[in-house]
Image (tube, rainbow, N blue to C red; front, top):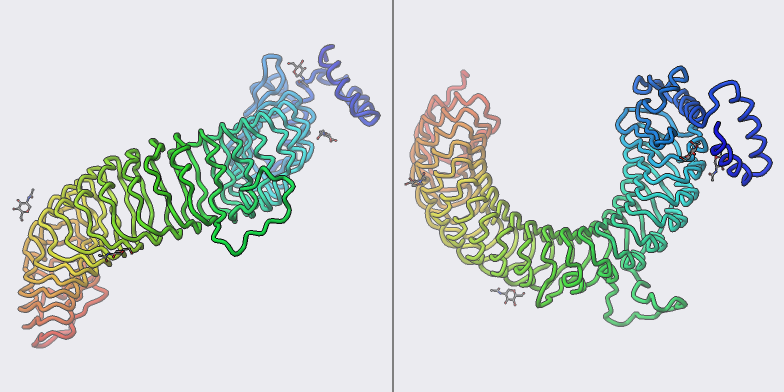
Length: 584
Ligand SMILES: *[C@@H]1O[C@H](CO)[C@@H](O)[C@H](O)[C@H]1NC(C)=O
Ligand SMILES: *[C@@H]1O[C@H](CO)[C@@H](O)[C@H](O)[C@H]1NC(C)=O
Ligand SMILES: *[C@@H]1O[C@H](CO)[C@@H](O)[C@H](O)[C@H]1NC(C)=O
Ligand SMILES: *[C@@H]1O[C@H](CO)[C@@H](O)[C@H](O)[C@H]1NC(C)=O
């Protein structure tokens, strides 16, 4: 042991008093014969820990016979001085606990990364000895119980992740000592209690995630102090409307009577103080009230905004929005009412907008047509009662368009046919009228086309035969009339076809026999007439064939019995005649 390190050890043990000295004596007598260096001590501590773990060949290099090579042991990193500075055993399939790891042997450890293993048990309070630790990653293990208050001694920590374990209890307020912390991830545990306001003292934080825990109570207003925060995820907790947070300047206030008014204490306003935020997720909590306009004017770096699954009531209508990087807006499953704000059409960076299951009413703003980067628009289950604005046809990058279950009326604008990237179109359960536009034939990427339960009329355009990638075509419960076009036979990828409950007439075209991928075919409740064409026997993938309630007649073609995958065959309420031969 060199002089320098001995001096260091002495000062360490002086602080510990007599037991420390006693330990020192034992330490020396034990070590004088063996490896007389700090490195030797570290090697012994590692081997002692290894011995306590179920054996794993990953640690084969960890052996006292090999202690000269300590710095080359699997997962071990040394500083230039030759002492252990890092232990990285991520994804090594290790089991066991940290109980036998003598933290006091690693005064120079800066990195402890054992993410993605099967370690269990507690974080020993002796972890407080790792006074140089800057990086601690215990992500994805089976650790449990409370986090010891000694975590507050790790004042050099910059990165702390306990993600995806089974920790519980409150976050110790001593976390306030971790003044250098930039990344704090405590998500995916069972932490509960209130979020300590002390988190607001960690002003270097850039990343804060408490997602998927059992935190309750208000979001502490001190979070508004975290001016360097880029990423804030408080989703999937039991957080509530903050009652006191609006009154941070009245620290002595104990009684506040506000009932009998129409005040809504709602969105944690102070979050708009975190001006560098690019990711903000508050979804899956119990937050209520209106959203402050400052959210859309102050957070100029915002890229992701998750407000879904709360009880928020109103979106603001600021005349301008500064969130020019906002890409993903999640508003679904709230109580948002009133009109869909026009200003959304000015956030040209928007790519994903999910707003289903709210109480939005009135128009779909035509300004949405300006969102040329929009890929995903979901306004399902609202009370929108306008027409579909033709401007939506300008959304050339749109791949998913969900407008199901509103009160939209008027025709489907032919401009929808311009959406060449569209994979899914769901306009079901509205009051749309008029024909299915011929331009649908241009939707050559379309996979799902759902127009169920509207008042669509006219004939099925033959152009739908151009939809050769379509897998599902459902226009049941409308007023379509005329014949089924022979061109449907060209829809080679179609698996699901339903035109049930319309007013279609004429024959079933023999070309249906070309739909070899079809598993579900329903024309029930129409006024089709004539025979079942023998070509029906070529639809060999069919599992369900439903022609019930039509005026079909004649004998059943023998080929029908080639359909050996059929599970459901419904021929009822027609005028078929002749003998059914059941000698299959
Ligand atoms: C810790 O690092 C210092 C400086 O690099 C060194 O002098 C000392 O020996 C190290 N201590 C241990 C126990 O490794
Ligand atoms: C350091 O570890 C020793 C045992 O090795 C323990 O008694 C002591 O409490 C620890 N110190 C801190 C600050 O955790
Ligand atoms: C649509 O809803 C709005 C708001 O509820 C209402 O004022 C308007 O009259 C409705 N328009 C139609 C065409 O039903
Ligand atoms: C689309 O369908 C129409 C009508 O069946 C047909 O005339 C036209 O050639 C088709 N276009 C393409 C590109 O297949």
